[in-house]
Length: 279
Image (cartoon, rainbow, N blue to C red):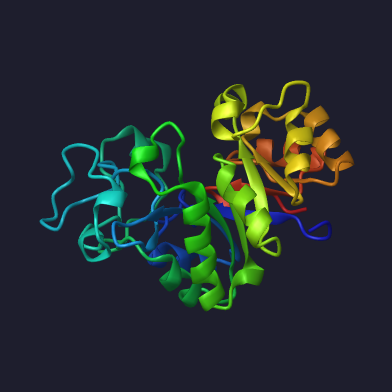
């Protein structure tokens, strides 16, 4: 990791192509992206699929009838795989704030919500940072972190892809479980201010008297993935002294990319990998 600055396409490369879709990954691979951050949910029949939200998002989702969803939902956890794949996630709903944030995204109508198995098979040259989308504030909407972690690793193992994944989560219970049962699987520890403030809820531990880099280092593994807006140069230096690579998210402005690189981060998670300044 020290020898290569890692450019990781967020949700594939959301600023350019429909997020978390096979079609988006194919386009990003064609543009030279080789590392991706993806989000995992579990269907009612136990399949790990790529979707960021706990419930279907009406800003990016059309029903089997082609109409935009009128409201959020239903939960991914309530749908079987064949039901979920009836939805089209190939474009952002026009006129939304979401669409205004990503004006360069090229629609690919007909894109479906893919399984993790299909994504790993379709991109054997790619490396994936896999976020487990569990939320301790909404436990009824997902399986537990440990269960999701084990389902993800089982799919990756069957695909021969254990060596090209890293598992992360804001809910540290999933990665922590892997540290106990599958220590060979690379892990990272996601943070943002609101989860740091509620660390006992999100991390499942008390961290009084420790900095965030110290808390991450105590969990094991070698990677901290913090929100970039709250990151400081001092925190990057402290993490480095503890043997942690720092890979902030989601960094989309070239000036910010250059500043963070100058601070010594190991890479960036970005919606716009095409905008990352050359070394």
